[in-house]
Length: 186
Image (cartoon, rainbow, N blue to C red; front, side, top):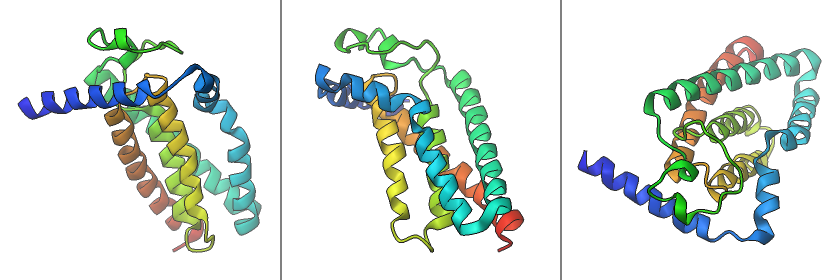
């Protein structure tokens, strides 16, 4: 238990350090980045890349599996959040007096849904295209920006993000196995 308390203390200190680097010049940028609706053009581009590589039928099936991965990610995140019940930094009385509140939310912090879902999507596209598209690793800019926006806005601790990345990888790996078996026939 001592290790866990030390880890949580370090996590709070790291959040405060990273959050303190923000300023009003960047606030609107990070608020824009954190809104999932603003990533819609990227998803359309990814669908077009999939369409070009696989045609209509396979790209639609891949999209359906990605939607399945997204839904599963959100369900798992909801279960974990409601079990762990870790307060968000902006709602944590031990540190929230040191935080600029830019957005408000009342649900729990651990594990980050934004991080989990965005890394699920990124890993799936990376797994599918890394052998045929030399620069497929660029897809990770999306979840990294998305995840950092959650720290900048002090709605998640760094460990929430890190475990979201890990959970996103696990979900993506499992869904990719299904895509290989059902769609790509590998």
